[in-house]
Length: 438
Image (cartoon, rainbow, N blue to C red; front, side, top):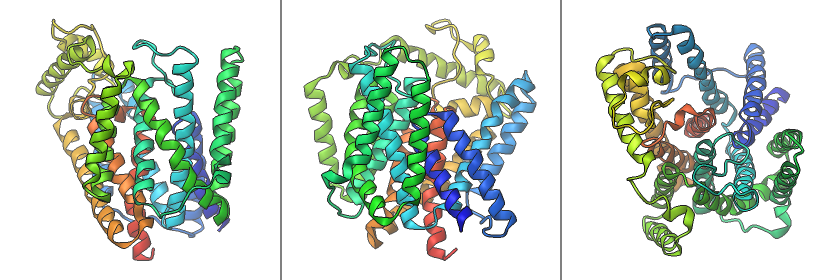
């Protein structure tokens, strides 16, 4: 029982640190896997087969084969090590077979999302990260990663508010969110004073510890967190997304929120449309400057996609190999492309097909279809059966958001976004196990 609680606590730490530190999230993942392995050895739990096993295994095997046939197999295999992150799905699907545990881990994710959103807002409004070349990135290294994670946080918060139990937030319960906001403010001030990375590391460690306490706390503290955190996370994430000037995340967020609206009541799509109309009428500079498809970034994406098609036609079976786009691109670059090189093709499907061939793209599509179909089935069931099933809707909306944003960005190449996608993917499968009495 202690090991089971330790696994849950470490999974909550992973969820909370995805938005603030890849290193911390990976440390939590490794520790969680060690606990999970100990539970397996003691026969306290078992690995349950899932419909995702075959597509994930096929995708992983084909990725390794593609790496072996790459121009630089060593570098390609080094890039393929990201496959290890697939274990997030199995760790979470095993640990989250109880509804309250799923809510606690998602509350931990919202806690980290509040920290990321607040830090991006501080970057923009206080530290001058307000230009296209210097956008707010918060705790993460790049604004694309930050926006991709916040997109999922926003959809999860919206799902909780739209479909979760009708519990009124109380001001006295907002202390946890307030503590995180105070911590972010302190880190921003110390960063501006040139205090180095130590305050950030201490904040991340404290956030992870807080997530563990939240996951293992009693029902009173858990209720306070799950009712107040979405109300804080949603507006912070929404505004941080606006000022991030990241168009692919805008597209993904709108798609994810539309899914949540449809699952709650289709007429809510009008409310979403009205909110977007108000945003356009207010015309914040961060939005209006990005409403174009003729800028250099958009033009470069078009020619990158053309080069990606040529790469696929040239090597349709195994592709160029994982991580090989930067080296291969100059040989396929169209003369009209503004930039001489690129590390990826700014499109999930093209990137996967170009690096792993058409079979790799097929395995990826298999994976996504199974994940989305399971999430949709559980979301429909949750809508009918109980408001406690809102995590299934968060899963469906979050995955749709990530895939829609991935039309214009290789967001699954970011470890943060991939871990978030796998965590969200696990929720409907964990709910199925709960119903089956596993």
